[in-house]
Amino acid sequence: MNSRRTKSVFAAVSALAVLALGATACASGDKASTSSGSQNASAANPGGGEKIKVVASTDVWGSVVTAVGGDKVEVTSIIHDPSADPHSYETTASDAIAAKNAKLTLSNGGGYDDFFSKLADQATGAQKLVAVDIAATGNENEHVWYSLPGVEKIADQVAAKLGEIQPASKDAFTANATAFKGKTQELLKKVSGLGGSNAKVVATEPVAHYLLDSAKVTDATPPAFAEAVEAEQDVPAAALNEVKQLIAGKQVKALVNNAQTTTPVTQQVVGDAKNAGIAVVDVTETLPQGVTDYIAWMTKEVDSLAGALK
Image (cartoon, rainbow, N blue to C red):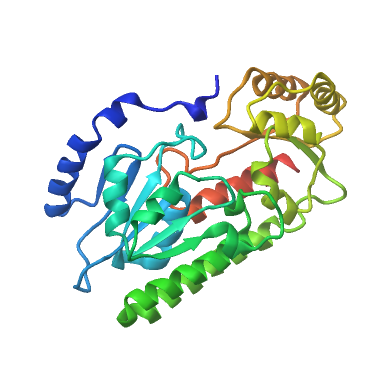
């Protein structure tokens, strides 16, 4: 079973009830409230004035907006549960209300979160940003949150749009974006060249493609294997056998595993890697449980990759 693609029926049924509770929580100054499929982080604005309401398709992009907007934004992340799947997510009433009130929206794009297009249409008065378009990687891989240079571009655009919405805070947004990019630059220096002399890995899915590219690590995964897993199709026997041989022969340094997609095949190759003494590097598509900061998350991902490639 694919654990990432499991939805909560209870959450969908109770959307409207939770929405009413969420309104009460905001009025009482709670810092966060959670409703079906969406996560809202808000607090009183120390500087006074109304906070800028922002809706992001996933908590990854919500965390980037929070880093740039600081205490001047109120961010709702629609996908904030590691078990939710942006590819098949169905929007709720509370999602629609959040979008209608938004002044800025940020989606991933590239076919990753198509559900968000309906919400963006309802955000008639909002500035709209699409991460894939901004990152402009020139690659069809939609997992651009692993492209540190791409995320830097997105942070700049978020700062620019927030500055247009709230001109009095423009300098603060720019400064926050600059500080954020300083941290991503440190990560880029850390990851650059991790691959050493022709280091190779195999991956259950091409989720961390951009991170591996920055590390100068070769992804030796047969395309047919990765494409089948990502499309939830049967993996061709020849492709599976090739991956198993790469692992058994220790021709790769690590197996990069999308921990949010679990199938019999991925479980099998993870087991093979562990039995062969090959490092398994788990990566995710959304923030892990209990993590709210993009830099902290990506630092852990980089450290895990670095450890595996030693």
